[in-house]
Length: 198
Length: 261
Image (cartoon, rainbow over all chains, first blue to last red; front, side):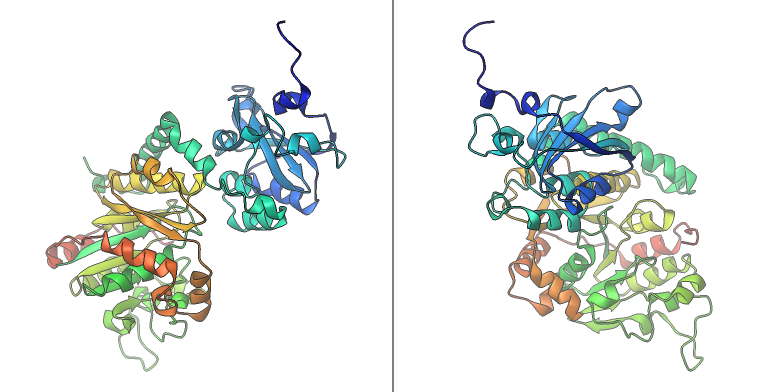
């Protein structure tokens, strides 16, 4: 140990998240249902997410999205050790996902969600970003955005998760590679094999 | 000359039909344009084009031995409607019509249309999950890829590109639709992964929703809107390449027969 102990407000969000009361757990085939349920329930707390590869024992990763009155505020992906929009980019397309929903007292997240506190900013996501980027659900994203406080609705950052996804060349190339393989396999299955380009 | 474009997204909800009609209207200032609703399973172009009451649609043309209300045989031109400076071929939405339709006939219908136009725009199904759905991509010369600036939509747009490449179909370009705020670096970042140019970005617009509700293409309903202006700029970046009309028609005519949807 060297120097002063880390002040609580500057410690990474993942180390400062209080443990909440488990209110539900399920394996979801997409992210829309747990996000919609959290919004409908006005849930203040967090979602703990274990993506499919972790469920199969390959990854062991987990991610967290904190919520204030059902609206996502912060995200981190402990498996990929990435925060905020990059965490959403890492989670996108990882269904099925095990989702645990935890409730916390209304003020338990105040210091974590304080936009002026040191160290919180990299974890912040746009209110509708999880619904849009993980669930591909425009209507839910819009509903979530409208439920957010006015200052968060206006904060922008809507395209940060996509930018993080596009910065990951290997990830994008993997999508392309899998699509090429799928196209050729389906061409054979559909009797379109002779229409394929060389 | 004629060039056939598939307007495709892979993912639903990207505003593909709005885009097809907007590009059609913008290109119709320079070319003879025919727009076809090739999404026979989830047809909706007729509502966007104010053709909800069209007496004859593509659905009728796809029915074997199709006849009109008077019992006369119908032909392709009976389902063509001159609207907003272009030719529009809507598809009906009746279940009976859907069940009667033989998708194999789509080849012949499109082949006939291709023989008589400069630019053929096929509004494609929002999926890649069936043979019928990928057929517009297989048969077209190039694809206009429509995406929203989200990870799921862009992933599906990349899939469309790879399907097109697998069948030797080119990419006319990529269009970001329903864009909220500033795209920032996303357009440039995405361009690295697409074979065609970034055609532009169209802002999320209440005008597009209002146009749909009014049964008018966006460029007719709100020609001065930011979205309409953006679509015109996108269309200016698409240069149809001449093909012998007969070649395109023959390609469709001899194309593989899709299974029933």
